[in-house]
Amino acid sequence: MSDNLLQYLGYFWQGAKVTIWISWLALLLACVIGTLVATANLSKYRALRIFAKVYIEFFRSMPILVLLFVCYYGLPLIVGIEVSAFTAVTLGLGLTTSAAVAVVVQAGIASVDHGQREAGVALGLSPFQLWSKVILPQALRVIVPPSVGIYISALKDSSLGAVIGYVELTKTGLLIRDATGDNVSIIVAVASIYFLINFLISRLGAFLEYRMRIPGFSRS
Image: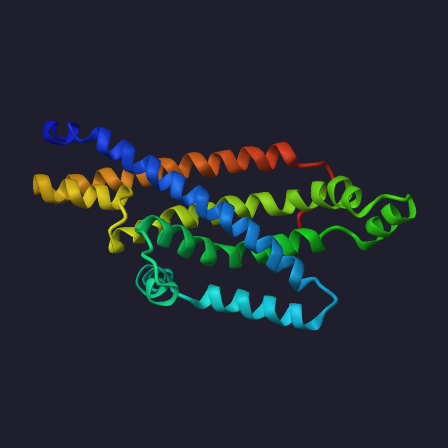
């Protein structure tokens, strides 16, 4: 990295922090919405199941960039208030990611044998106790590993926020490129930071999967 580029390390660091932060917010929103959608898809009510399936298919097929444009340019026309780039990126990423989260959460819940639920009811467990002590501890072992991959995808997709002017890592790199005229070094620096972040997250995911593993327990 050239000496001229070293003076911008603080800006790269700030851009990386913003990227990680916006991705976490989007994942949090996705977890809330995705869990509700997964629950609806497992409901005994047909209307809820149909809604959940349509929701999942719609947001899985919607390009994230198109959704960002809708959130940033379309919502102000609908709700009549200005939507910031931060809000648009959080909402767009959250909605797109929620479809993937819904599929994973549904798979996690479905992985718990129905007989264990019946046994919990027979033992007099309340619905809260049944979920907190029987279903969730086992479902999380199925949910957590792919959720790490979902977060990494959200983190990479957050780079599209640069198109609507949100200053995260990619947009920071573009601004520094404009200031220095150095294309190659900027691209290498931004790509290296993305790689480092995602590598560390994937290692953390592998560690969590190992810690949560139970001998004889299969995620399949």
